[in-house]
Structure formats: C-alpha cells, structure tokens
Amino acid sequence: MLRIGLVLECLLGGRSRGWACVGAGVAVLPSLYMWAFTVDDALIAVRYAQNLAHGFGWRFNAPGGVSSDGVTSLVWPLILLPWAHGPALSVLARAKVMGLIVWAATGAGLGLAIGRVRPGHWVIKIAALFTLALSVPVAAYAVSGMETPMATALATWAAISIRRPRTAALLAGLSALFRPEMVVWAAALTLLSTAGVRRNRRGAYFVSLALSLAPFLASALVRAVLWGRPYPLAVLAKPGSLDQGFPYVGAACIVTLLPLAACAPVSLFRDRSALAIALAAVAHGLTVALVGGDWMPFARLMVPVVPSLAMAIVLSARRATCWSTVARFVVAMSIGSFMLARGGAELGRHVGGDRAALIASAKPWLAEVASVAALDVGWVGAATGARVLDLAGLTDPDIAALPGGHTSKRVDSMFLLRAGVEALLVYAPRGLPGGSLSRWPEVECSRVVEARLVRDPVIALHFGALAWLPLGSSGAGYVFLKRDLRTDSH
Image (tube, rainbow, N blue to C red; front, side, top):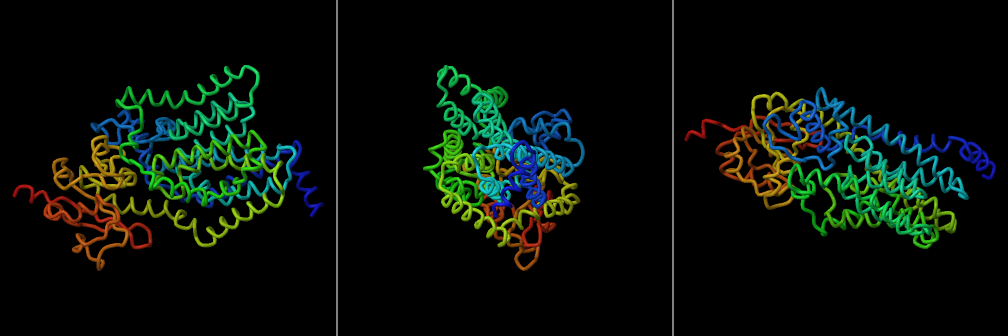
C-alpha cells in the first residue's frame, strides 16, 4: 500500500499535471455518461437567443410578442447568440458542448488546486474527487444546455482562488450573473475569506464586497430599466415557500454527496479557507430554502456550490482525524454508488432522446395552428414558430402576475378563448384512459392548471383531441387539443 501511495504521489504530486488530468477526467467522464440529460427550460433560453439573433429583441414570441426576461440569467442568451442559428435542438447541442468544455476546464483546475494542497494525503484527495465524480446532479447539469455549468465554474474557481480575496470576490460575484440567488453565497464567501486580512482591513472588505455584489446589482439595474422591476420574472411566476424549500435543500445535500462528506465542523473551524467555503455553502442552502427550492430534477439550485466543497474537504482534512474523514467519504460514496445501482441516473439519461422524439411528433400538428397554450413551453417553442401562451408565466408577465404557483396559475377557459388560442397541450403522466382519445376529459393531470382546464366544460365544447404525443416509454405524453372554430360562431 505504501509503495502504491509513493507511485501515485510521484505521478500526481509535485509539479506534475497529473492532478489536472484526474480532475478533468472526474468532470468529463460522468458528464458524458449523462450527455442526453436536459430540462425544458434549456430550450426556453434557446428560443430567446434565436429571437435575439434575428433582431426581435428579448421576446419568447416573435415578432410582435411581449418583451420579457423569461430566462433568469440575462447573460446566458447573449452567450448563446453566436450559435443561435439553426434548429433549436442544434443550438441546444452546442450549448451542451460549451457546458462540457467549461466544466472540463474547471475540473482540471480543481484537480490541480487539490493536488497542490500541502500537507495532504493523496488518498483524501482522490476520495474527494471520486465523490465529486459520483455526484450525478453535477454531471447532469454540466451538459444540460443551461447556464448552470457557468455558475458552477465561476463558483469553483472562486473557491480555488480564496487566498486571493479580490479575485475570489469577482469570480464569486460573476456567478450571480448566471444564478441570481448566488449573490448571497458570493457575499458570504467574500466576507468570510477577507475576515483574516489584517492590513487595510476596512478597505479590503469594502473593495471585495463591492466586487462580489456589482454583477448582481448591474443585472438588477438592467431589469429595472427594461422591465420595471429589479428581480427576474421567475420570482413572480414561481413563488416559493419554506415548506418546499427546506425539504428540497435537505434532499439536495444528500443526492449531491459532497455536503455529506464536508460535514466536519471541528476540522472546518481549524482552517479559515475551508470554513469560509463551507459557511458560504450553508448560506446558499438557506437562500435556496427561502426561495422555495426548484421543480427541476437533480437539485439544480444546489449544484453550483457543490464542487467547491471538495476543496473545503481537502483543506480541512489536514486538521481532521483520519478515521472521521474516511468515515464521511464512505458514507457519501456508498450513497452515491447505491443511487447509481438503483438507476438514479437512468431517467435523466433518456430525457434528450425522449424530448427530441416528442418534438418531431408534435411538429406536423403544431404547423397547422398560429397559437398554442402549454405549461412546458420549452419543447413547444422548439417544435413551432407559432405564438406560445405560457400557462406557467415563465415567459409571460401577465400570466406570471396571476394568483397561483408555478403550475397552478389562475388561467381559465375564457382566458384562452379571449387570447385566441387555437391549440392546447395537456400533459398526462399516466397516459390516456383506455388508450382512447375520445376519453381525453378523463385524463389524470398532476398539475393544477391543466387539471382545471381539462375539467372545464367550455374547453370540452370548443376543443377536440386530435392526437396523442407520447413522451418516452413510461406511458406519459401530451394530449393535443385543437380549437373547433365552428363552435365559436354558435
């Protein structure tokens, strides 16, 4: 065992770039395994970027649609802009490649930084990186086509640079351009990392804090000027609650694994940098709980701070007992291995293919309508250039302002008729009753707004089911309802 350790330390330690290769491998291989993963909101950003590329401005529906900030990160559609020409799925694929490259570079930097920690045992370093490799949420969102890998990269580099307070503050602050709730994490990391600066302490605090807050404040100012409010439209569309937020954060700390391995208060308090990273992560968790968590799978909102905890673990392990560190790694890696063995990543690995097949099957039906209402507007926007009425309000300020939550906005049949909606898409997780389109009013809807519309007799009077659009092999899918204009004349 000692000889193996000496060989690995020779290969990975010192001035070699072995640790960078290990870090890059930890980032790339799991991400390639999760390559087909994506979420519906990724295609919302793609449609905004495409409209920007065509000169229509910040609109989900163009030309002529209302201007809105339907993407939480204002900079993400701008980053996609050079690659926004072509079919939506092609643009999404380019975004996924970009995310993979960014995460690979970040993984290499993290591996190199961990390898340079002195003193530090190579077993602890390998265990920290291997635990990160087992974190399915981190790998999944690296290739989701969303802005998450950008926020993750900036947060990780900020943690790596924590001994350079101003650099860390700027990098941490920039992460809030991609995920606004990260501003609390950025401020916490900045204040905690500069707490031990003795010379010109007040100046260091002021400058570093300003750097960490400036990107968020600039984004808020742009929103206030363009849309009359400093916060993202998603705050209105998806009001959260603590009843949802704290269970979300608790589950996220388990499935992302690194928070479990970093749970060592005594050793963290013995290392100022490790403590700053860990407490900033706690502040982020509380922020996520206060905003009510998120509806997306794989703990998206917690992912950006997870890789930085690998750095905190290695730094604090220098002052921890070996058995306690090993025990925490055993627990974290056992949970990760168990979830993988039980198929914890399988559903995510089929999302992309299932979504592409859904888009292809919907295109012929959507080509015949000028407007369609749906709750999941990302894939719908990729399947048609028609006007899409967003029943969740993520891209529509008028619906976002209505009472109700993300999937329970007070949208009724008369609202749809007045809006001139020609088609309606309803998600049915359990499929069609008896496999018959004629029984579509009996479908079980898991989301309030769709259940309300399906049970509305006015919808049954004005709309008829023309197609069943399957989503994957689980039996779920969408009912395509088209408006019968002849009933409007009676």
